[in-house]
Length: 123
Image 1 (cartoon, helix red, strand yellow):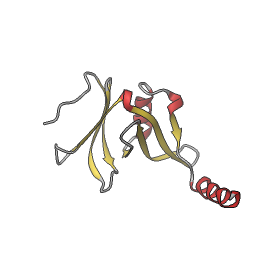
Image 2 (cartoon, rainbow, N blue to C red):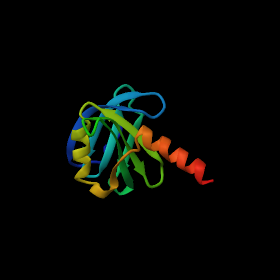
Image 3 (cartoon, rainbow, N blue to C red):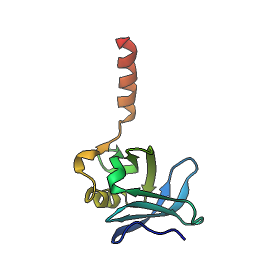
Image 4 (cartoon, one colour):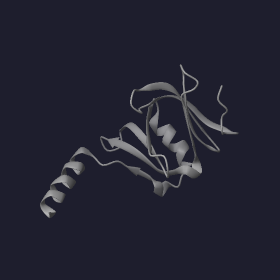
């Protein structure tokens, strides 16, 4: 069994880690960090302390009505993508520990296309 880094837990919710193959488990948000525990294999877990979180990136669709996934970008180890049942509740719990200026929206499909065209014609 793995030891949690949190001493006080704010939210526990069912979630999916989208790192390669989707893995089902639970997200635990507490005073020390963000944790994901796989429900089938206890050896597969992700623990991210709040000091290590650089940005929280939310994929927002339909003007904020639907958030299909969110990602946590760390300072050293890359980006971890998750989705859960109640994404807004998770993002509000994360906002307690991460600076709201470091919580951003991801680019939309059309923004990516627009950037690619402008970079092609700049050259």
